[in-house]
Length: 109
Image (cartoon, rainbow, N blue to C red; front, side, top):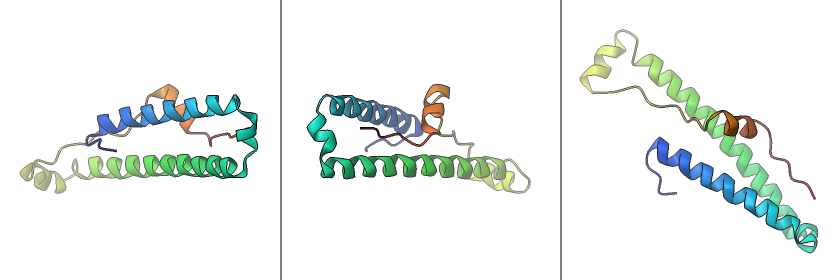
């Protein structure tokens, strides 16, 4: 939550994904927990949050692409140069993480 740069946020998201995967593996060991209605609600919330994070990632990348395009075009490139605007990095998790995050999470019992 204290990540400031895009690189730090990418690393933090990877750690979060690892923790969630560990949670799913742990749950498989406890059938009583899987049947609990509160835990089922928690799983639905986690699924919803993961979907929202994917949507925000897409929005961030879209806005970054628009910004990078805008500062490269005339006359905005003159203003961008005066204020030291530079192209920003896209939020990229890599090809393997991207493929898994493009799909909605599956919650199974």
